[in-house]
Structures are given as C-alpha cells and as structure tokens.
Length: 222
Image (cartoon, rainbow, N blue to C red; front, side):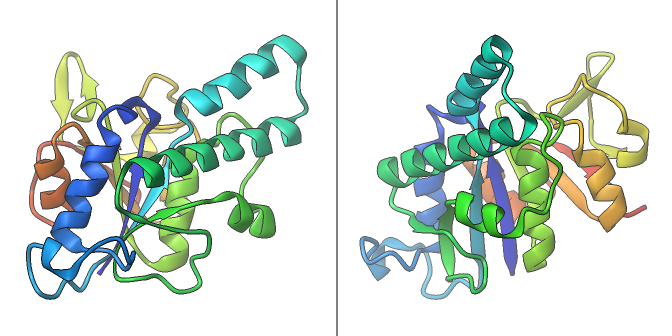
C-alpha cells in the first residue's frame, strides 16, 4: 500500500510530532528507528511525506512581489523552499529522507523534492502550482493514495464542512485550502485527494488505513 501525505506549511509546529507518530505506527527504514519502536511486527505500507513550502516558500513570494522574479526563478526557489521544509521535518523527527521515487522504502520517508523535480520538470512554472499539485503528481507517479494534511478539517461552504466534492465543481476557485491547479490535475488523472486536519495524528493514521475520517474528499474520478 502506497500513500503520499502532503504536510502543509501551516502545520510547521505540529508536523514533527505527526511524522514521529506515523513512524511509530508504520515504521521506517532509517537506522535511527529500532524495530521494537513500531506498533506491530510488519507494516506493508510505504508512506511518502511531501513537504509544503510554508514559511520558506512565503519568503520566495515576498521576494517575487518586491523584485519581480521570472516564473522559472520563482518556481525553483519555491521548490527549494519545500526542500528546506523537508530538511526541517527530517531534523525534527525520526523519518528517513529520500530524494528519489524510483523505489520506495517500507514505512515512512520524507521526500526531498528538488532533484526529482529538476530532472523531470513535469508541471507549469506558476504560483497556481504549489506543493499540493506537486504531491498529486508524485502520487500519480508511484500509484499512491493522496492525503493532504493541513490545519483545517477540510473544505467549508456556507459554514459547513463538505465531506465530498467534485473537483470539476471546484475548478477556477481560489478560495480554498487547496491550490488553484489541483482540481484540474485530479480531473485529468482521475484521482482523488482526502483533506484532513493534521493536528489530529490519529485522524491522519486512520486515513492512511483507509478508514472513514472527518475531512473532505475532492474527487476527480467521478
């Protein structure tokens, strides 16, 4: 079972604890993780954490606003922001860091995305494309389920949490906790994305197991 979890920059305080909770549940091939630290003897899960850009990408946005960067420069600087967040997550947790998706280790690992994306360069260079769509692209490449962990329970409309929504109905919307390009990517690739509140590590773990949790499913496969 392969799962991509995009951990948003909004969770920068909670993210290390979330990652370590995932490692405790699903293990890691990192030599820093003793076998007995896992909650069961064998976990057939490969969980790849794709970092958001967070405060690191925000610094690039501010630089772009002030100095008018080219689209290419802003794109690669923002991905380097994701790389910095990956470094933070690895430093503050017990997860394994990887920079390739050619073969995935069992358990939990954190993707350092710059080298992979620089080699493949699969997506438009635009602020419409952020780490959400990058995580979706990674999930597509490895045939993984996609979960977005953020600081809200999901998508709200008229003050109420929407448990399921068609990506088609969300195209063109900039008022959301997902990036502008993600709905179109989900539709094109017939994928779905589950949005959950990453402040609840138990909720994220249950989502990995495929159980029903509080959140919003954005469906591009209907």
